[in-house]
Image (cartoon, rainbow, N blue to C red; front, side):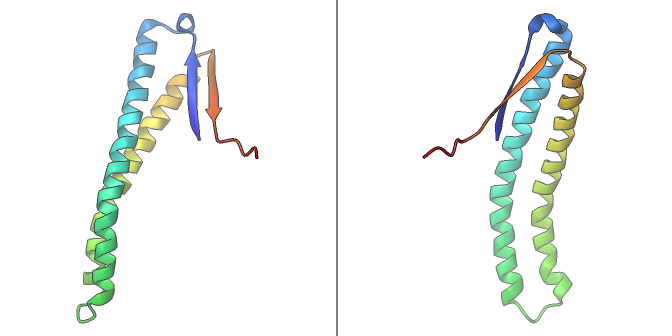
Amino acid sequence: MQGITSIRSSAVSRAQLNEILSDYLALDRARMFRRVLLKRFGLLALGSVAMAIAITGWPLLIRWIPVALFIAPPLVAWLAELRVEHRLSRRCEGVDVVVTHHLGHSSHS
């Protein structure tokens, strides 16, 4: 679900507003980076899973190490995204007037 957050510029100082906006941009970049990593490394991980299943002569641990290595970068990017999101939420908690509008798909027929 998408959300739009609005802050009255008179409710915060210029420095606070700059910090909040820079955190929003950092969060957006972190999300895009995670999605790219997930697509690319996800395909590699799926290929590694297929190889791990097909190759039966090697030890189980050796066959599954590449899968774990391909899953690690998107996982690290997701953790970095959570860190930026948490920092942004702490900054927004310090502002008196923050209004968040959630946008979703309506299920009207």
